[in-house]
Length: 486
Image 1 (cartoon, one colour):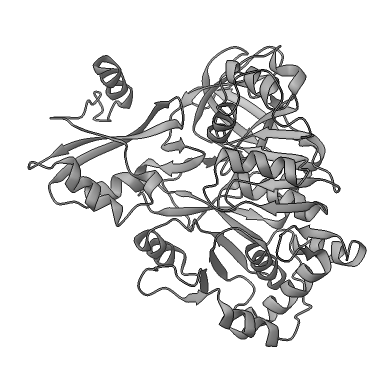
Image 2 (image 1 turned 120 degrees about the vertical axis):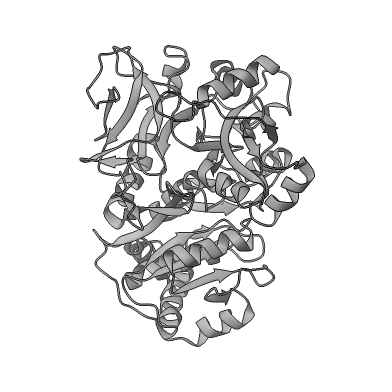
């Protein structure tokens, strides 16, 4: 089944229901499907064919979703791109993935040599004039989207979701997490993020009503929207939840009408989970997933007090194991490397990377140290790979390291994440240089090459990087030294 078939079915049986709520022009399911079919026709006229990749670098809204559905109907796959990326980051997508087209906002500065389509009035006219394309590719095991991360070289890589694997994620949202076809959902996490994308698509593919918030919206605006539009479902990263908590100092619920409040992207501390349930909504669900592993565990409200600090037990059809460095399973209560096997795990990475060790023999290794207790609850203990979660956005250390190494005079660099009480983690760089370089020069170098949230908040100059007997950098020692300084 093609994921776009869900939209076609809603257009048939829920034709007049509002799919995307907008003050200027609410969009029904019938209108969304009509736009998707005409957009598919315009894409085909532009040369898009089954098996192609199409980049989507737009702010959130109905046009973003329509493009995704049109791309999927044809049998192509989409690359979700963050609209905050710099031209250099955009250009990397072009060089690595060679997409047929990339859609940008009308006024967005873009990298050289990209197959740019401006999503402007001219494109709207092109779509309106295109014949509706009623084709529906079979879906199932066709690639549908690329969950973006960074490869071993620091270049972008796509974790490949097929229609089948992503449909299983939707089933998890509907069955385990409990999103319903009559829900009104507020989208506050960007669609370019896996967490935001999952909650939004579970609403629209499930037949509910979605309202988008503007980019980088504040907590007060979120609260006002929840009240004004009678929102049932809100998905947040911990950073947003902390900002909402700052709006109140007592135990009066700020959002009593929420049926479902989910926290994704990073861990909430136990005391924060308690505060959220007392002051925001009692219906807090925490779940754990990863870019390549899909949705894996869920912790329901009644379990939070029983298992403080846990991210829950496996979701339907998910198998978790804790293994040692030789991939031997470890007993309950022992910390080791987490690996995941489930129907919603991505198929692997694209382009193929011989050095990638995140997909092995049917298992996905998301890069977390963890333990599973005797009752089957998962407790995350830290990370061993190179992802940093800053304010709910993924930052891939190899990508930042590659940019810093591009500055003449930087000989070696290591980028790590350190705890930040507001953002979850901060990006920290340790540099060995051949000449005197100050922070201002590094910042100027980064600004043209990295989105703002990826730029290191701290930059430490060291004479050498600590290594073990095999010559491998001991990142733990850098963190220990940093802790000793503070």
